[in-house]
Image 1 (cartoon, rainbow, N blue to C red):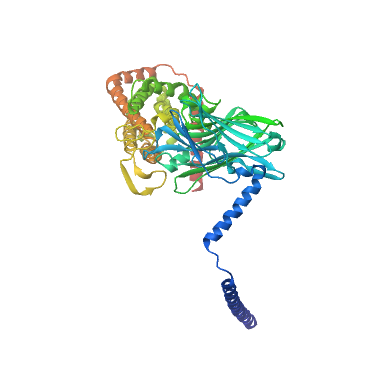
Image 2: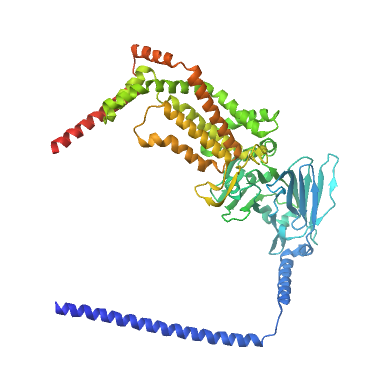
Length: 615
């Protein structure tokens, strides 16, 4: 034992000595490195003092010279277009003002005349836009058209009212590129024709490689919510698709158009002869700036290898208005999200019911808040037969409540026995215990349909009603000095509060109509649901929360009138007694349910017997 103890002490001391040795050696090494660095810094300062002084202006000038030389080399046969001064040309029609730049011969910005932002400034699209393609400028030399300076011709007005402007890029060897833009009256679509003279030399094997970089910026009240509503839409092989969660898409089939979509506006590039392949990379911003997302699109088109080629494109810069988009390229109306993916079942509801009815009321009612109210009343009128049957079922449940309470006291903790007798009572009385769920189930597809419709309906944008300044966004009655998590945000919406309060009143009323619940979760769930709505609704469009408020008020009114003035409770009790006396035939579902409950009851009895034996 003593030997073992001495051995342990020896190892501990040896470990301490090793630690001290490595610590001291490391300290010495660090000091040596620092001393060497000081010496090198001193030598560098001495050498720097011997060099001639060059001011920052000279360094900047040298940098510009190197950059200019690099551009001239890349321009090759288009040397004259390598260096230039940016000049702008502005054209306009009744709906937009288009600014073109000679750098790249492209669109620099679009101002939409009929739309403004929350701060009353005009809506401007594509102010951070670069759209061009790569050309061969010489032997083993290439450049992107966005880096070259075109020559702008004077705009020409046609007899049909359209305006035409040409941007030309010419080389000394006769090669030429012409960008022709045609702006028609009252249209958001711009025709863009690319004419290449010497295309067999300008393009390698007829391959046109288009590159489109775009950064979208905030146009609505909440940048965070607008980011959530933004996505990339496209038509591949004449079928609509989109990406929202994913950040990239590889095109393997012909592409008709690609669109960068914000909540209510979009930028769309259309190829009349289709792109063959390509890809798009898209990234939402996560900071607190006004920038929403960045997009990099690369598209390839195979052209005939010929001396002269003209390629027709179109550019759409404008609102995501269903009635406008359906007149543009095929499938572009699907940019308006009326229901997608797992919610695609609501698209027919929106397209064939909600939208036509909404447009009908909007045709003679100027205030969109009242249009939403009329739409709500229409929906409740159409669903009223199902609603009435559910209220009738609720009245029957209320009539049976005293018997159920007595039965519950009789069976005590015997849950299976109570459930079997309850089912028997419902069958005898002709009561469907799920009948009262119909309004709630009916609300689900209607709510998702209206959620999509109100989020995508640009007609609601900027429309005020009562205390809401914009029905397409949440209303604000108070701004908080902090942000509440779980989606609530930094504001309080009054329409959300009215929707939650009316939902709470409906829950209280329904609880008074249904039998007492033994399960605490089922007992308190009707009160928990309105509280959850508070966090869900606070950032949703006020048109939706206004609809929900009106719908709840209609529900409360109908429940009161039907229960007190239409449904005869004495007659219901008399009919229940008649049902009890009439011969009953069990449904297959009832038979299976009773068999299951009977099996559970026997199993419980066996467990209790085994427990008694073990004791």
